[in-house]
Length: 102
Image 1: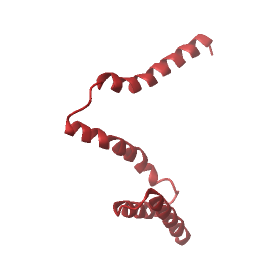
Image 2: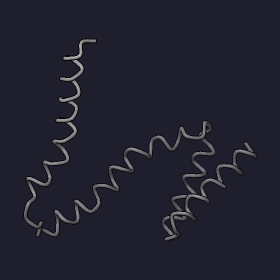
Image 3: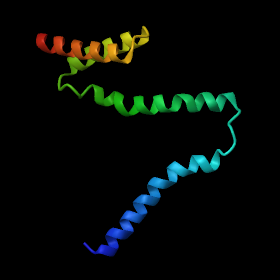
């Protein structure tokens, strides 16, 4: 590989990575006062995280039955307001127990 090609590739990757980090700072210099936009921006990280991780949940164990049971238990515990540790341990134990049965 040509060293010049590698250097240009690294520079372009740095620019592409840098733009999404700096763009919000440049655009939103003033405090956002709209309640609608604030509430929208508050929920965006959760929605993106859910959209990225939720499909992979069903393929994480190699058995769809254990994955569905673990997800159901995690959702129930989270809905009831349990801590993140309780939700994670509850889902793991459920997957393990259902895996022993299936």
